[in-house]
Amino acid sequence: MNPGVVYAFLAFTLWGLFPVYFKALHQISPLEMLSHRMIWSMLFLFVVLTVRLQWRWLGPVLRDRRLLARFAASAVLLSTNWGIYIWAVNADHIVEASLGYFINPLINVLFGLAFLGERLRRLQWLSVAIAASGVVWLTWQSGHLPWISLVLALSFGGYGLLRKTAQLGALEGLTLETVLLFPLALLYLGWLAAHGDSGFVSASSGVQFLLALAGPITAVPLLLFAAGARRIPLSMLGVIQYVTPTLQLLIGVLIYSEPFGPVRMIGYGAIWIALAVYSLEGVWRAKTARAL
Image (tube, rainbow, N blue to C red; front, top):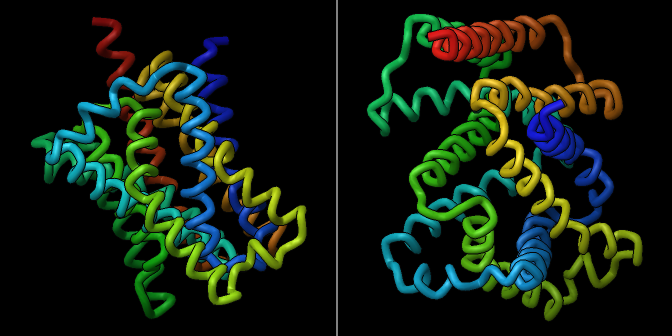
């Protein structure tokens, strides 16, 4: 088996298991959990880059104001995505959060159309229309937009757009984002500790250990993803990525007993059909291109 497939599958599987991890930390507030994720990620990445002697890129980057501004924007989108997701998991909205990552590939298509001058083929337009009908159905039946799903999809889509046009690799880019977020996270955790509101200080040693694991838990899937993405076609990567929201959906329904009745099934079904059309069209295009 192509090792890239293994790396990508492991990355998306680990991301799919995130609800279990965040549920285990339910006594910690989402904002404090987010701050710890930034702090421990920075420390873990510092160790990785030190072991690999991979710090030379940082000096020139810190002198490039335009690049810093771009990564400051991507850091805001990333922290928004993380924060909403952590809150959603612990507010029993895992199923709705999973929908955001089902929608995300189609958001990427629309962003490519709007910002990168890409053109959509007929079947891609069809997949976007079918997905939109699913969102409209869910909105009509619930009386409000599935805002958790849309915020997650849009924030991660915007993050992907900024990273696609950036000049840094996955490891360096994540490091720069955490460098920019680190001071804010440290100040917030210091403020909580000074006011006696730190969940980390009052938590058991087991919870403290789980929070400290936020560093490798954040960085390892990203490194696996980067290794996989270099070794397999983008079309195959696009199909494997559905492992993540599928696992999240199953965890929400089967482990945490979140509702998933016929109304949701119709809306999600429309989005799954859209993804199937989009994925099969991409695979067919890739095979046709190789045949030529």
